[in-house]
Length: 252
Image 1 (cartoon, one colour):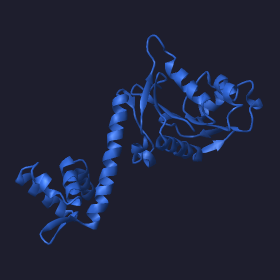
Image 2: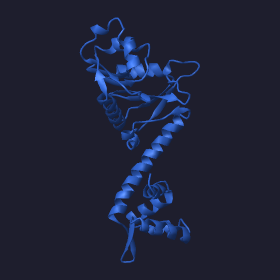
Image 3: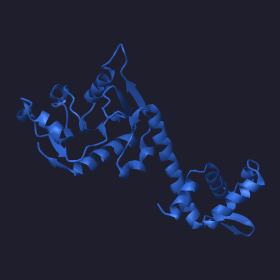
Image 4: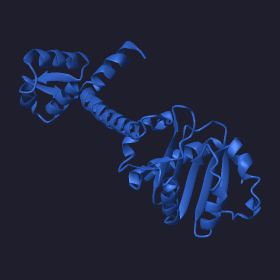
């Protein structure tokens, strides 16, 4: 990262500078003048002018074209950062990681909820997932691990499904291909093998998106699942599935 990038990052993570840009966009700089000391405001405005984000026209500060564009990017960055922090709080002992192409789309993950196992109901996440699957017509999943119940689950729902697609690792495929009735599965059931190890597991349908993460210790967490039913989250999940599918080879 070069010096210029560091300066822009400094602007991006400074709440005050974003507030100034937004107040100037709304022609409401007086509200900011009431909020911060003159010396602080002067310093921040000078910094934004030096980056060609602000200019003065007829004794009034305005956003430059560059300033308007940067404000859009900063808003997007802020929303994605907030979403990453939200998920990290939900999974404080986990590795929350997404492919680089999806980092600036995290704000699409709306209406998130966590389904966790507890001492009285260890299978709660699996039951919730099964209920959602039975409501779905299409299922796509990226799985870096093997659920022992996979064959039974898909055998139960395959008839009512329009599409079932799995992206798995080579190790998981070796476990799936020895399943006794795999040759009897219909054509709408497809399996793809990906070379790289995904950092999370996803299941996405026309009804829901679910995600599981690895713990910091390196083991996969079956007992804590992130779920959303929002349309934006489903679009995010489908695109993430296609990302891994494009890197895969069809084996079934």
